Length: 260
Ligand code: HEM
Image 1 (cartoon, rainbow, N blue to C red):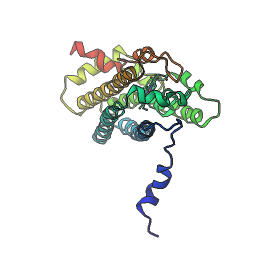
Image 2 (cartoon, rainbow, N blue to C red):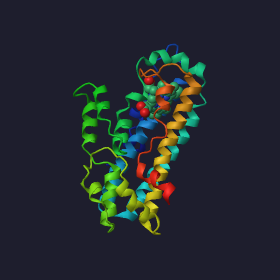
Image 3 (tube, rainbow, N blue to C red):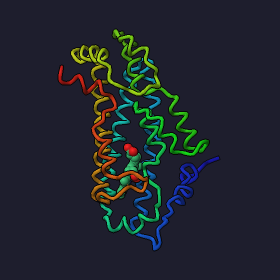
Image 4 (tube, rainbow, N blue to C red):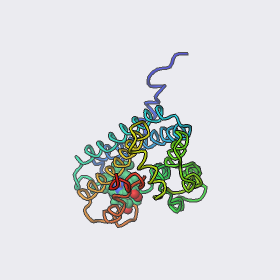
């Protein structure tokens, strides 16, 4: 039986999901909801691609991994660019419905936390913010059991015949990504050899820089919209967000740069 465009994409269901809570309804609240929903969809796609990328790397399938990471980079650029759209909303317009959000904040996005887990930021305490046995908590618990992207890259180095130090090889694949001076020695050698591994290192740096760029753009958007007011999620707001800036996901790839 044929299906239509609307049936396949569940367009009617999708279009019923934008429900402003402010009264009277503020014009810009629709944009605010749609942007956040689009971000959640992109987080879903990035998690989907990310697990694939990690597996490809772990299997040493470098060319396919590079194509997947290239796609993730394009999506990330789109995610950063979308901030421009939300910045067309004025502080006054946002304040017209901000109170109706009560405690709701991107701070509570479980997919964002899952993405952080994937990138090696494994602050498992964030799970405690979700009620035990809630759908978000269960999903995050599953993501906490998955290996990090960096662990996949380390396996890739070994598959490509590089002499990976035992410290890196023996590290739990689900452990937080931290810098490793012994691994840096190897990465320095990789950087001095032209080839696909060096290319992959540079793509990972692009991705890391892109994530940091998103955080920077988000904090500036927050600052221009609410100044130094506290966040709806309960944090100090801009001060809290500033403290999350310039923290690399793959510290080894940054720390070696002054020695190249
Ligand atoms: C006018 C627009 C926005 C404002 C004023 C805003 C404000 C804030 C504030 C103040 C925080 C700190 C936590 C708290 O709420 O206390 C925060 C965190 C966060 N926001 Fe936004 N935000 C905006 C748009 C967005 C958008 C479009 C996204 C996309 C999903 C987003 C995702 C996040 C995430 C993931 C965090 C957690 C960051 C972390 O803990 O490292 N925000 N936001």
